[in-house]
Each structure stands twice: as structure tokens, then as C-alpha cells.
Length: 93
Length: 411
Image (spheres, chains in turn cyan, brown):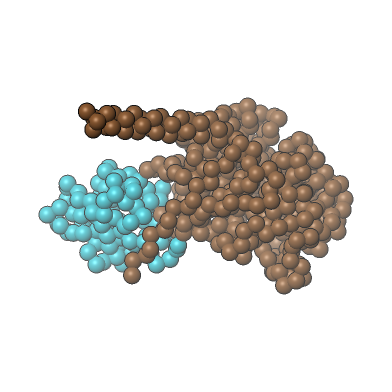
């Protein structure tokens, strides 16, 4: 089962307008998944993580319903067929 | 309920010689234009709604008509964007233009200053960022590199963040001497290069730091803003975190010129485009109460290099106006007489078209204003004419097609 990224509205201009991006490989971790996403859409990755490769402080990444901050960060494992949601935190605007 | 989609801002469409104001706020960028009379301004915005915009610039060198802006999203980070059509469209590359290189260990937090280089060096641009660093471009802003000379300066590790963060907020390119530039960081103070950025010398002699055990340290000053006179670039005015100074030697030494101001605390400073003895400041009560003294909104102007300052109040509220004007929220245009502009944290934008003598409120109800830049519009005509030619051609094609269709129907 492929892994799917859910892209929030503000980042869709950097993903050809798509709200869902399906990866053609099965990443082991969220970090691997973001690397695969970056190969397709680097503009999305660069707005989710900093130059140091850390998830930006006001961005949340969920694997299924689990926030990776409460798991193992970018080392959080990605089950086969998982949905990875990128969501802006409640701050901002 | 889903958010209502925001309408794009109305087009600005300036003509050559119009006055532009680029007003950065905590919730987006506003563009204003007026004719040279500067009696009324048309407003376009917000551009980048929801993002703070601490830096903006207009670059008309090399035939350009490029507006630069640095929107910073709390979620997605800061980036450097440009528009070549006065805000109708913005160029936002996939990978943000300004990024700290691998190995620097730093992450871009905000962009505080965008400065076009010398007129003769039309593809040079600079930007000051947070954490304090200088980036430079040699190709008109397509690509940017970190200035290693400043980044590797031994003082950098000891610079401390001020209230706004550890930011490099001032970049002053000497218009006459290639390779000479003054920057300022809060805290850290003023630094100057005379060799195009390879080496930097600290330039804080005479500037005090009341929050340090030694009030006159070599570095560590909280310089809020420095302004440079274009006609006499070695003449600088400096608004400090307590202290108002002038330098006549490009920062080698500073003289206290807080003569007759109600407070020498403040953030912004502006200088006249031609007269090196004329400058403008907007004093605030204190670092503990960063509002205009006595609830009176007063710009102070000197005509004699800081020997004395006079309050400019005509048209400004003199009762109950506890306003705050931050470091980049004042600007002076290049016209005769010079126009002076400033914006408040309460979202009010004021303009003077007579060198501060009288003032008018030109926009109200904006988000908190953090940046005001002014420029005279240029190079508007060439592309407009091209666009007009395209419209004329389109109309001509339509007329030909209609005539053909009419002929076919008649046949």
C-alpha cells in the first residue's frame, strides 16, 4: 500500500496544486518520507523543515492520528499505507 | 466554516515619477502610490496576508522596476519575493532564496533588511537577517550567499538578542566608495567593511550601552537604527537604545547629539536626501515604556546636524497618542521638498510632504506597521507600453476575426 502525504492549502502551490501526494515507494520513517516528497516537491519540504532538517516549530506532522513530536520525531516509523498529514499549528495568521 | 477566500489586492499601476510607499506590517505588505504632489495615496494590499513583512525595497537599477519583500510566515518560515509588476504577481521560488548553508548550524528566522547595492553595481543586493548575518547577491537577487567575513567575526558568538531578536537590521552601502558598507546588529552594534565584506571592523566608539557593566564596551551596543546621508555618506545618524549620535567619519567616532529631545530613547531615524545637517527622529519615553512621551506624537527634526532638535507637531495628535514607532518604520523620499513618512504599531501611516513641517494621516486601520520604505517609481513606461501594444494587437485580431465572420455570414 502506498504512503500518502496530505498537503495543506498554503503549500499546494508548491505541489502542482495537489492536496494528496502519493509516494511510489515505502519509506521506513517520516524523515525518509519527507526526503521522497522533497524529490518530487522540494518547495513543500523546505517550508516544513528548516535548513537544519528540523520540523518548523509551528508545523505539525501526523502519521495517522499521531503527532510525530509525541513519537520519535523524524525517526517515527511509517506503516505501510499510512497517511502523513502536514498541518499548520493553531498559531499564526 | 471554511475561511472566505481573500480577494487579490487591487493593482497599483504607478507612473514614472510617482512616489511609492512599501509598508510592511505584521499581517502583510501594503503598497501605496501618489503623484509627486503627495496629497493623496492609493493603497493596494494586503499582499502576503497573514505573514509579517519586516523588510521591503524598490530596485530601479538596470532598467528594473522590482519590488522586493520578505514575508515571514509563522508556520512556513521567511522568504524573499519580488514583483516586477507592482504587486500583481510575485516570484516565489520553490527553494527559498535566502538559506543558511549546511554546516552553519543556523536557521533563518526572519529577514530584516533588503538593500540594493550601488547604482554602478546594478546586480548587487544585500539583506540582513535574523539570526544576525548578512547575505549578498551578485546576480540581481537570483542567488544569495552568506557573507563569511561577518559570519566568522570573533565577536559574533557574543552578540545577544534584543527585544526583536538577534537581528542584522541595517545595511548601508556607501554610494561613492565601492566595497564600503556599514551594518548594524542588535545587540552587537555597528560594523564596517572597507574591502567588500572580506573583513569587518567594529564601529561603536562613543556609543553607550547602559545595560552592560562597562557602559562603553567595544561591542555589544543595542543600536536600533543608523541612517546615511546620500550626499555625504560618511555622515551618519544613529538612534541607540538610549542615545542619539552623529558620525562624520563613517562610524569611526560618534558624538552625542541628543540636544533638546524629550528622550534619547527611540528606534527610527531618517535623514534628508541632500542636506547632511537635516535628520528626523521619533523619541519614545523609555525602554520600560516604549511609547511617545506625554501621549504626544512628535517627530523631532534637526537642521544643524543635531546641535538642536525641534518638535514637528502640525497635523499629529498631541493628546492621548501613546504610539510606538519601530526601527524601520520611518522613511524619507528623494523629492524636493523631501517627504517624510512613518507608521505606528497601531496601524496609522503619516506623511509629510514638506520635510516634516506638517503631517497628514494617509492610512489608518492597518495591522501593526513594522516597515516603511519609499521610492520614486521608475521604468513603469516600457513594460506598460509593451502591454498596451499587446492589448492593441489583441483588439486588432478580434476586429479582423469579427470582420471575417461577418464576411462569412454575408456569403
